[in-house]
Image (cartoon, rainbow, N blue to C red; front, top):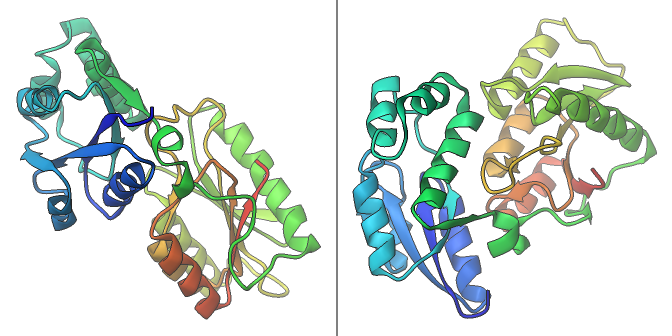
Length: 278
């Protein structure tokens, strides 16, 4: 992809901006379509345009005017209601397929978005294709290291994630003392960690010593173009509040948002961050 012009559809958070910067570092040019109401002001640091999420014509026209045929989707957006989704897809889809997309979960909607772009002649790329430096490497990332006891718990957690992933459920678990303490649901990682904190505070979960670890990995059949699992500084803060001793992620499989700050915060909190074999 040397010297290509790549588009970034930017939702909320710092991650779309990190992708755009990584694309530039790799020798490509970048054009950012900031989704109005979601994208951060940093979008203005790049060649860009703003567009409404519910205005696919504007998004597609902007990309075509820039001569872009490859793009990446990044950042969070609030899920539109069924009627809003219907208005987006009506331009592209027949009614039977519309009903399947709108009635499905987030994964089905994301796959529908990818098909939308594919049908209009665009290739949707994954983060690992355009910005592989943003994925977790193998090994410890900070000053705090994991030990052999941690490794046994992490292996248990990875087995659990593999099993759950076959049912399109969960990208994270909390494990400790040789048992699974919590499983991530649709509410997300931070909500799961708050649940762990409440369980320990109410003594529903009792560990002989601090040993709880957050483990994250993608699902076995994960579409790597969208919704790869991620951790960032906020994850570290939530993990510390929940009394966790570390965060382990599948190497080359999980996004590190604001990597330098993430590692610095983990070191300050005494929490290990490690990339492990998934």
